[in-house]
Length: 250
Image (tube, rainbow, N blue to C red; front, side, top):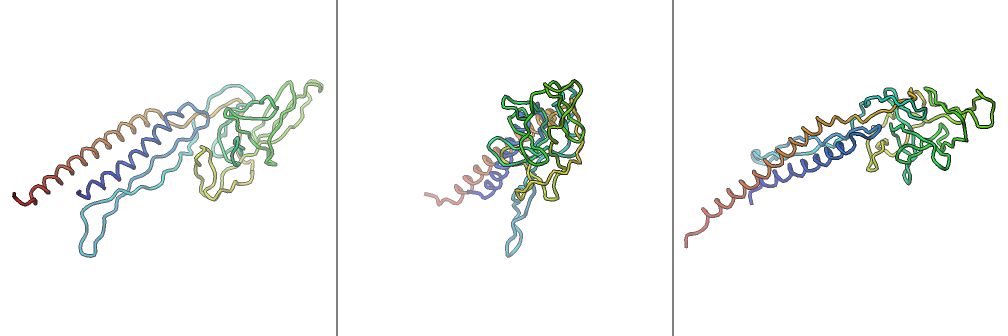
């Protein structure tokens, strides 16, 4: 079989992976704080020989990543809806997972009194502890993440500090999305809270996925995949024709 078929199959495998990334992005276009995944980049390499250069080019893939550009802000007015203004992350504890970083800020007080986002993930305090909210009449969160409440049995207007949300600008170590969708440094560590991040109360950050761009990318990927399928078919026909020419006459 002509080796050019393997070149096309390699490209098809990369296109298949990129189609999965596009589908993932489209599925999360309405998810709060979602940062879109970046498709795998193509690069090419010539196959060197000891004598001369092979004319075939292999498609290589460079690892993708994620787009950390902030998404659009949506005003909700809810005191526990928090958005990161600019760069930065909440430090959170996913259910059944390791401590991670997230920009999702749709927090509510759960039935057990702990603070959780829409996925059940718990934001941590600056002490890296789960935050428990006592019964209250009113709750507020300042720009630096300090949570204050008016306790039920306290005089009107009296505020009590409950905790301060742990936030971080990031890490000197490169960041990457892990398989559970959370952001972590590539070496597995989590940066200490620095609380330099400004939070906006009453706002939610939307997904930074642009559906039109993803749909166009999906169409381009489908067309490129079809071209490679036709190339494999053509290479197979050429291979069969070459074999028939070399066959000894009966």
